[in-house]
Length: 109
Image 1 (cartoon, one colour):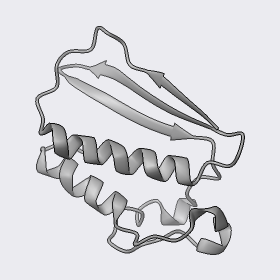
Image 2 (tube, one colour):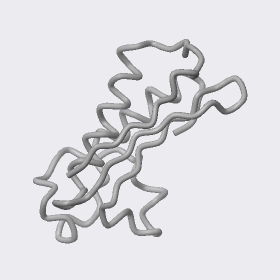
Image 3 (cartoon, one colour):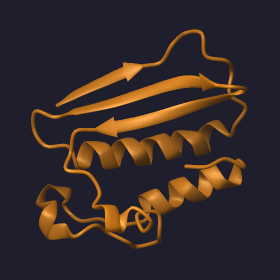
Image 4 (cartoon, one colour):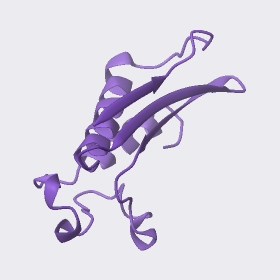
């Protein structure tokens, strides 16, 4: 699996709780790595968006079914495990925590 980074040096400083935003990124990366098949790619990028920095985590996994996109940030929600046997299970709280921490910063995920 390949992990690509596109983080331009010209990005402005971000005023945030470093530990909490680190946890958000850890949760997003963990999910992306967990659901990316062997030989796949995970890409992390950041771009300036007005006075903000927009961070994206993309992966070449199967993706989230359209009908479940609204649910993935709900506590304990898990996408059908039979479709993702490599996931190894989990509590289904990582994305919920990520959303709560981003919300606490007054932003959106």
